[in-house]
Length: 168
Image 1: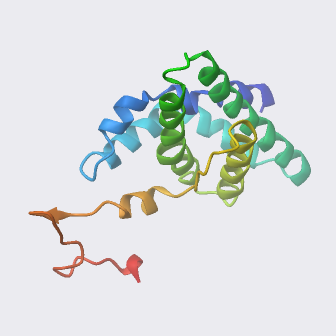
Image 2: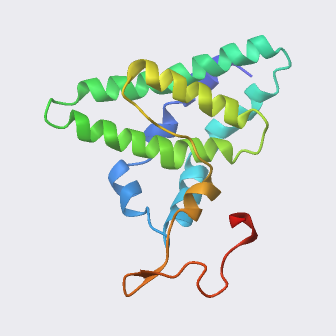
């Protein structure tokens, strides 16, 4: 695998999704389908990430993970810097939303032992450029589990025996 393929493709993880559309699809009814659509749109990036994971030399793999994390962060930072003063904060919040709700869970859904360390590296790189960032990476399942079901304003998850074994 050419390292440049991975580095060049990393910005797609942020650029392939419009934050406003992502936010509109962030509901219990729509999240799973939109998340899967997002994952399909960046499947080439996941292929490059899987190739990176195959590197046997841990030092080399970690160095490449860091370069990839920096490439993603640099894209976000440059996009942020291009925005005018009045929309910068909103745009950064949108970027961080996409990162936390789609990018991190998407990477952690690859299903490799390197997923979590890679996400942590990306998060560390992000904090270098955006020191006030307080992102807490989660999996798709953790995020999906956070949606509540309400009837007439009352929370009913678990009320009728729908509590899953994962909740224990």
